[in-house]
Length: 621
Image (cartoon, rainbow, N blue to C red; front, side, top):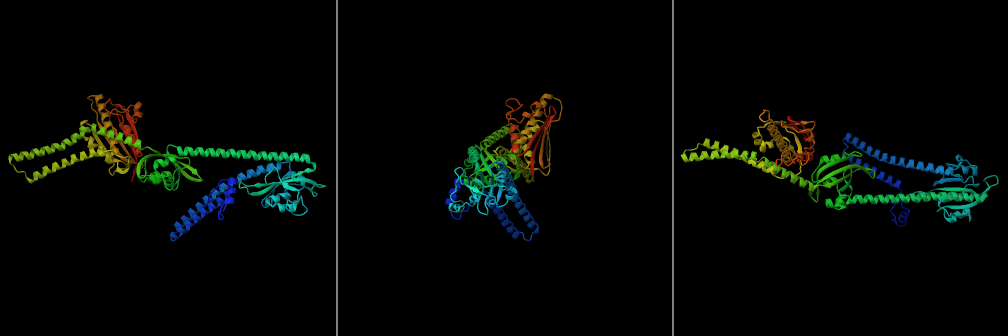
């Protein structure tokens, strides 16, 4: 188990003092290396396992090695970019530090944890007579001050010597700095400096990393021969350093406070959002985080949801949604309406909005779901009411469809009664012929009744593979007589082999009934306008496949739609019929049904020439 912790030094101290013996504390860069190692080991184990499986398949082995190489390349590339970013930041810091040190009038030098000199400023060159080229990059920082090699104060800091060991080199002349935590200072005469030697007051301070570990030391030197001036300059330098430290500390404190405030604000907005929010891995669609609203909506705990995959929330398989989510690109957001999800096995409807994002360095998806079950149910009730209204409008035509079989049965019954009254025998051929005629008309009446009942039932927003020609043909089972009474000629040009789409038969039939009904009224209105003038009352319906789409056109030769109202025909409650002749919901409902199945509807019309509606749906095999 690897846990990344805060950089708070107090917490780090607590952990060092109380951690179990087998727990290892490492820094951020070591953690990144361990993580890279684990990823590579996991991938290596996978490819070794697959190589055993596909040992007889060179091509598959090649694919596995290429996949491993790409994965390794991705890890290396991510780490390289991160290291380059860190390197640039370090270079900028190094440049700033160098400029500060180099521009300082106080003799100053810096050593790292290997005791190698990294900075030796001009003031130090002037004081000691040694140029930076002679000292930087070596461990000869002792050379300008001592006749033989021995630790100087900067080395004492880096080695973190105990006080007893420091006294071996400096006796009682050294002391802890009162200004800088962890720094030591002393004053001593150096006969090797200058012509006659110089008294120097020197201070060495530790340079620590983010975890408080000493990684180097900085030492400043003062010529105390002119003590007052040197002490004043030293004080100013220390004050400036302290002010910068305080300024940086205050800035970091402010940034931490801003970050904490931002996190609290994000958490509040995230958990109190009115819609369910899911953060998931883009490749696997496994859930990474969910908000509090999702717990209530899906009736699951956070622990249960975080063990789930987003696809587990679906009530039925949805390959289109799965493929679309996994192919989202950067900055892309998409909308998926009316998907069926489930809570504890109970289906309900949601709208889904999904956006691509980056989370913890990986591609992920942020998706929100809005419960629209109540709206869908109300719309279903509205559609059902519209269907019942349609049946009322078509009642006379269906009555005719039922009257004709009844007439045939009545004639057959009269025929049998007359034969019986006259005492005449009925031959087997006559009996069979009349019985077959009765049977065929009873079957016809039963089909009409069954179709009326199927059409009248309330249908769900489901998708099954259907031939789009079937609901078109069924329209004429209930409207055939109406069209004949209205003297309307019908031409059907349906693709013989059929065109298949994902939809629901009952709802599509209602769409086509609405379109045919409107066409019938449009031609009636034109007939009233023209009086006895002869013209062809024609309804033409075509279906064909074009570029992977099922296309259906419904054309009439009616009065047409004026351009100024053409954009309003799909609005709810908009109608051009007289009061009592229509609700204005037919085209609005049709538009919604078509949209639910991923389709589109377009209209072309010319006044007194006719109208053509073009419907397009995604075709399936």
